[in-house]
Length: 119
Image 1 (cartoon, helix red, strand yellow):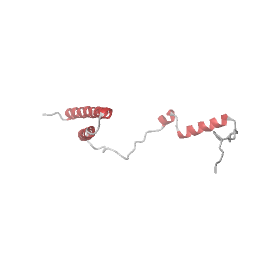
Image 2: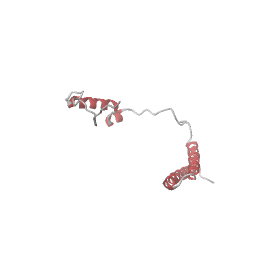
Image 3: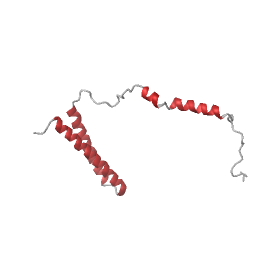
Image 4: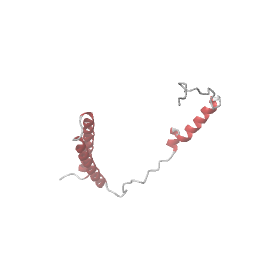
């Protein structure tokens, strides 16, 4: 059975909302203010750090730096393993990330040298 359907379909031109756009705008503003606080509200709220992932406050600077250097070295190895499987722009981007990691590792090593100078 074939049903005749106009293209586009006929619709009722009357809106289900009142034509008073001020009420609609006010409601939208209230909703935005409720869901998205202003920058002043955000800055006035005291920062409470998340304790889900925390670093031991008793850890020494040297311990933290050693962990940082080891983590950066691990990331560098993972990136180089991935580079072998890529070509073109993705490979170049990953090599750029690798260079950034290497610079961070060199910087962390320099900090370690200043904490405990080599003999």
